Image (tube, rainbow, N blue to C red; front, side):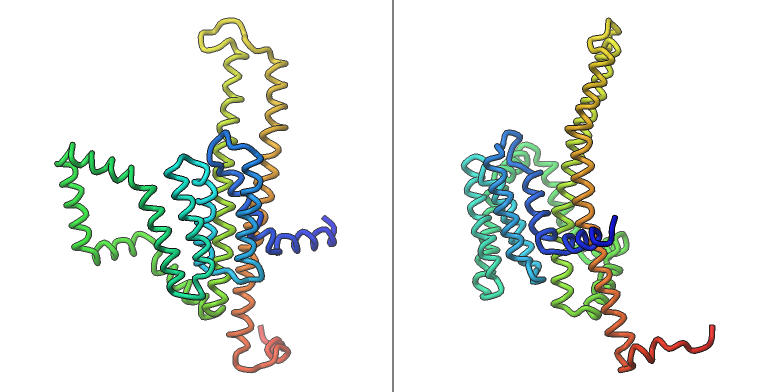
Length: 307
């Protein structure tokens, strides 16, 4: 790769379009409301969600509340295409996303956005809650055991929390977050982490769905070997070797190569943003802590004459 092309590639991976718009729109493209969702519906929703994420995270102004707003917008764009109850959920989530974008202006706006999200979650979970209630009435012994287990965990909350701290890296993560906050500052750290979370969540979840689709298609291609070998009963071949070879080439052209291209592009965006964050953290540590005593870079970098 020539230096000019490399510079343009790095510049593109660092721009807001690649960091916010592409991951959000690609996520919506992979997670459709149904297998039969038409491209005429998917494309405008992908552009709308990507533009919404770009408007919130452009110019390094991302926050955790804006990340929640993008998540609500993603869920709303999917739920709005489902039957009537889910359309109500999608509408509430859309209003919640709009309110969360203005949450920094007023506490009432933040409370309203959270209330709309809770209402949407309650409507979405209502059938599941009704099913659990009916199951509890049918099996009172199991319900009583579950309630007793929850009560024991609640009464020994401190012990449960200590167990979680020992099993998971809670203290280590807290220490790393405190150190990064000291180096970068609270506002700068929130901006970097929320932007990194936006890109990572959208990229990795979408790539996971892409991987599942690829595995299913690959398994269907492998199943054709049974037809080429005469099937499970061992009869005459139902698919010739030439036909199987053509199917394999078609698989590589339609499934394999697009899979490689998508995974390479999306992983490059995510990996570059992660490296940028680590570079910013290292740079801030060098400048703000090592040179905090007022020494000039020239004096600090002067060789001491000893090994």
